[in-house]
View 1 (cartoon, helix red, strand yellow):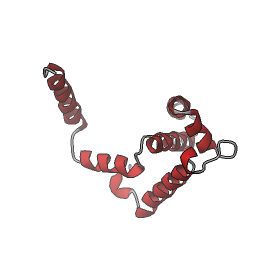
View 2: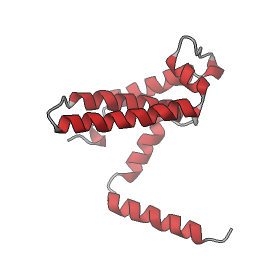
View 3: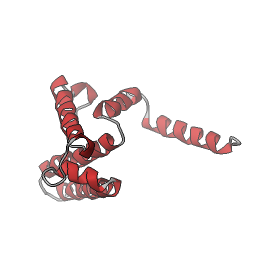
View 4: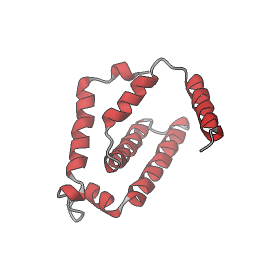
Length: 132
Protein backbone atom coordinates (compact mmCIF):
# COMPACT_ATOMS: atom_id res chain seq x y z
CA UNK A 1 0.00 0.00 0.00
CA UNK A 2 1.27 3.48 -0.78
CA UNK A 3 1.01 6.59 1.32
CA UNK A 4 1.48 10.33 1.01
CA UNK A 5 5.24 9.88 1.32
CA UNK A 6 5.06 7.85 -1.89
CA UNK A 7 3.71 10.81 -3.88
CA UNK A 8 6.63 11.96 -5.95
CA UNK A 9 7.26 15.61 -6.72
CA UNK A 10 6.60 14.61 -10.34
CA UNK A 11 3.10 13.45 -9.33
CA UNK A 12 2.48 16.71 -7.51
CA UNK A 13 3.72 18.54 -10.60
CA UNK A 14 1.23 16.57 -12.71
CA UNK A 15 -1.59 17.70 -10.44
CA UNK A 16 -0.33 21.29 -10.58
CA UNK A 17 -0.12 21.15 -14.39
CA UNK A 18 -3.65 19.77 -14.65
CA UNK A 19 -4.89 22.43 -12.22
CA UNK A 20 -3.24 25.13 -14.35
CA UNK A 21 -4.88 23.73 -17.47
CA UNK A 22 -8.27 23.72 -15.75
CA UNK A 23 -7.70 27.33 -14.62
CA UNK A 24 -6.90 28.32 -18.19
CA UNK A 25 -10.20 26.84 -19.36
CA UNK A 26 -12.33 29.02 -17.09
CA UNK A 27 -14.75 31.05 -19.22
CA UNK A 28 -13.42 34.27 -17.68
CA UNK A 29 -9.94 33.37 -18.87
CA UNK A 30 -10.89 32.64 -22.45
CA UNK A 31 -12.08 29.06 -22.06
CA UNK A 32 -14.43 28.25 -24.93
CA UNK A 33 -17.39 26.04 -23.98
CA UNK A 34 -17.69 24.99 -27.64
CA UNK A 35 -14.17 23.55 -27.77
CA UNK A 36 -13.31 22.66 -24.15
CA UNK A 37 -15.04 20.14 -21.93
CA UNK A 38 -13.78 21.93 -18.79
CA UNK A 39 -15.00 25.30 -20.07
CA UNK A 40 -18.38 23.73 -20.85
CA UNK A 41 -18.69 22.28 -17.34
CA UNK A 42 -17.68 25.56 -15.72
CA UNK A 43 -19.96 27.56 -18.03
CA UNK A 44 -22.92 25.37 -17.05
CA UNK A 45 -22.18 26.01 -13.39
CA UNK A 46 -21.87 23.94 -10.24
CA UNK A 47 -24.83 21.68 -10.94
CA UNK A 48 -23.04 20.29 -14.01
CA UNK A 49 -19.71 19.43 -12.41
CA UNK A 50 -21.23 18.39 -9.08
CA UNK A 51 -23.47 15.94 -10.94
CA UNK A 52 -20.37 14.55 -12.67
CA UNK A 53 -18.62 14.14 -9.31
CA UNK A 54 -21.60 12.11 -8.06
CA UNK A 55 -21.61 9.97 -11.20
CA UNK A 56 -17.88 9.35 -11.03
CA UNK A 57 -18.00 8.47 -7.32
CA UNK A 58 -20.69 5.90 -8.12
CA UNK A 59 -18.52 4.51 -10.93
CA UNK A 60 -15.60 4.12 -8.48
CA UNK A 61 -17.85 2.11 -6.18
CA UNK A 62 -19.11 -0.04 -9.06
CA UNK A 63 -15.56 -0.71 -10.32
CA UNK A 64 -14.48 -1.73 -6.81
CA UNK A 65 -17.49 -4.02 -6.46
CA UNK A 66 -16.67 -5.57 -9.85
CA UNK A 67 -13.05 -6.08 -8.75
CA UNK A 68 -14.33 -7.90 -5.64
CA UNK A 69 -15.99 -10.38 -7.99
CA UNK A 70 -13.10 -11.01 -10.35
CA UNK A 71 -13.26 -7.84 -12.44
CA UNK A 72 -10.29 -5.76 -13.49
CA UNK A 73 -9.01 -3.79 -10.48
CA UNK A 74 -7.33 -1.41 -12.95
CA UNK A 75 -10.76 0.02 -13.72
CA UNK A 76 -10.78 1.46 -10.20
CA UNK A 77 -7.77 3.60 -11.11
CA UNK A 78 -9.49 4.77 -14.30
CA UNK A 79 -12.64 5.76 -12.43
CA UNK A 80 -10.75 7.42 -9.56
CA UNK A 81 -8.86 9.47 -12.18
CA UNK A 82 -12.22 10.65 -13.54
CA UNK A 83 -13.39 11.44 -9.99
CA UNK A 84 -10.22 13.38 -9.20
CA UNK A 85 -10.44 15.28 -12.49
CA UNK A 86 -14.01 16.42 -11.88
CA UNK A 87 -13.17 17.22 -8.25
CA UNK A 88 -10.33 19.40 -9.53
CA UNK A 89 -12.82 21.26 -11.73
CA UNK A 90 -14.87 21.92 -8.59
CA UNK A 91 -11.78 23.06 -6.68
CA UNK A 92 -10.94 25.51 -9.47
CA UNK A 93 -14.49 26.87 -9.51
CA UNK A 94 -14.27 27.59 -5.79
CA UNK A 95 -10.80 29.14 -6.00
CA UNK A 96 -9.03 26.14 -4.47
CA UNK A 97 -6.26 23.85 -5.72
CA UNK A 98 -4.90 20.33 -5.30
CA UNK A 99 -2.23 21.88 -3.06
CA UNK A 100 -5.01 22.83 -0.62
CA UNK A 101 -6.17 19.20 -0.49
CA UNK A 102 -2.61 17.91 -0.08
CA UNK A 103 -2.04 20.38 2.75
CA UNK A 104 -5.18 19.10 4.48
CA UNK A 105 -4.07 15.49 4.06
CA UNK A 106 -0.64 16.38 5.45
CA UNK A 107 -2.32 18.15 8.39
CA UNK A 108 -4.20 14.93 9.14
CA UNK A 109 -1.15 12.68 8.80
CA UNK A 110 -0.48 10.81 12.02
CA UNK A 111 -3.94 11.56 13.37
CA UNK A 112 -6.26 8.68 14.03
CA UNK A 113 -9.30 8.83 11.76
CA UNK A 114 -11.46 7.88 14.73
CA UNK A 115 -10.00 10.72 16.82
CA UNK A 116 -10.35 13.17 13.90
CA UNK A 117 -14.03 12.31 13.48
CA UNK A 118 -14.70 12.55 17.23
CA UNK A 119 -13.00 15.96 17.36
CA UNK A 120 -15.07 17.25 14.42
CA UNK A 121 -18.30 16.03 16.07
CA UNK A 122 -17.34 17.74 19.35
CA UNK A 123 -16.57 20.97 17.50
CA UNK A 124 -19.90 20.79 15.64
CA UNK A 125 -21.79 20.22 18.93
CA UNK A 126 -19.99 23.15 20.56
CA UNK A 127 -20.79 25.39 17.60
CA UNK A 128 -24.45 24.36 17.69
CA UNK A 129 -24.68 25.11 21.42
CA UNK A 130 -23.05 28.54 21.13
CA UNK A 131 -25.67 31.31 21.18
CA UNK A 132 -25.61 33.54 18.11
